[in-house]
Image 1 (tube, rainbow, N blue to C red):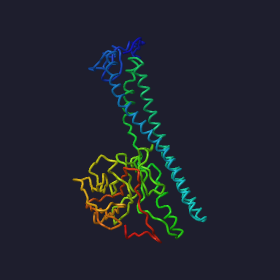
Image 2: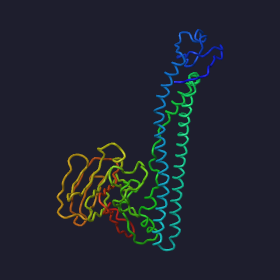
Image 3: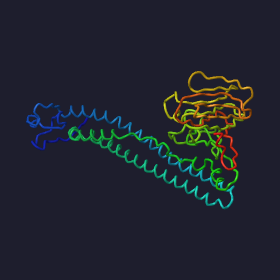
Image 4: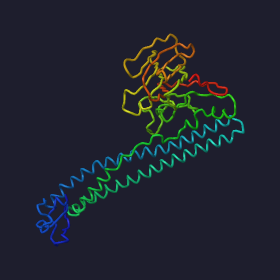
Length: 390
């Protein structure tokens, strides 16, 4: 393995270091071998020992190299997330300004306050990502240094290699003990806080009639093939976007969730499906798309190939008899009675009802296959939203 190596001598006996003590894991001379300190110890010639133990080091090195790849992959995601936070901030700021232009001049202070809150959150989240990236860079540098140092040790010659064997193994093992980096849930800008029901929130101070959406779509859960409206109440199929793979995002189906989950009281919302030829609406547990649990709850009403079906993920899909083509669907979630009901808001005719025994929060669910959008129907309110309906 090694050639033209310099000779090394025992610092105690000035003899050549020709043997390797497998009990002390260090090269020794023949006099050391016969000393009491090495009584009944196991020895190997240094060239044999170097060959055997260098293979062990290389075996340890392989998983460390894989760990380095994992760290670099997550670092790339961190960088993409940090960039997307800025994109989100710019987009949110634009929408905030456009909405505020429709308001009277005395609302200027309200606009400035909201943009300031958005900027503060951007600074906080960007700083957090910068710290995460910096920490990850440090660990990557440490692992890289260990790999480089190990390579130098392996190339240094038998005796130097064996002299540093224990330290080399210890460094590699310490690096392998580093926790694998994890993606950061909740790292993106909470757009629902800044954009969700924005006009309604401002109206509550102005005492004017505004439009209120019972469900606000969460863009941080939206599949990359979906595009949301600026007010986060409509979703349609679009070209694939370059988005960070944050833990909340749905990647398996062209779907998006509402920003708020429900586990008490009653809640309902109407979804305008229009002429869309393939869609699904309902409620689901947020964990269904972020875990491998295929039995996680998803109660949905679907329309595809001219047929209406109901599916809960348990048992067979039910084909429904719907006489008139639906233009909109009302989803009614009764958390206390454990029911999910779909009906036609134009006729109040019941389409299908699911019953369940779940205790977890259920989130509004929207699936769009075609380009025609699905839109949450806004509610008109005078002073307060009609909470009895929810």
